[in-house]
Amino acid sequence: MDEREQAVQAAIDGELRLLDPEVRASPARVLALLDSEFTEIGASGRRWDVESILSVTSGGSVSADSPVEVSEMSGAVLAPGVVHLTYLAENQGRRTWRSSLWRLTDTGWRMYFHQGTLTS
Image (cartoon, rainbow, N blue to C red; front, top):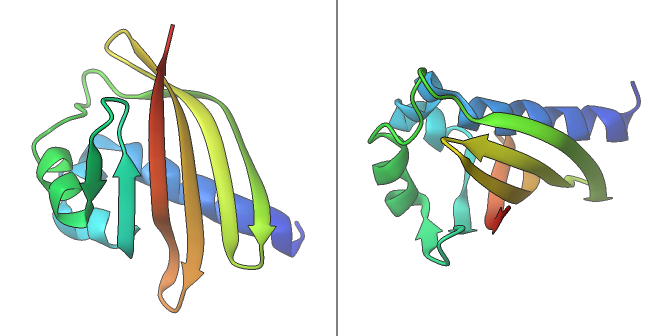
């Protein structure tokens, strides 16, 4: 696996961890995956930052009984230390195209930006 493939795989691994109900239930584990400058534009149009997203993830927004199903995930290295991921997420009948930017920091790969767009 070359350096670009390793970068994309690291971002995919981080993204999947952030969708894991056990990880989401732990603010410390979520924080370990989010960049200090993290922002999100949710499928609702709401803008989120680290503090506001922690209140949602720790509130059980995804349960083990109804995990997020991921398909069509792909990634591209945009520049050294920057990976863009896209994928389709389905949860409780809601389908959302997701897009994330991950960047390499001194402490590892962190999600810098995330956006969800509802789809049918």
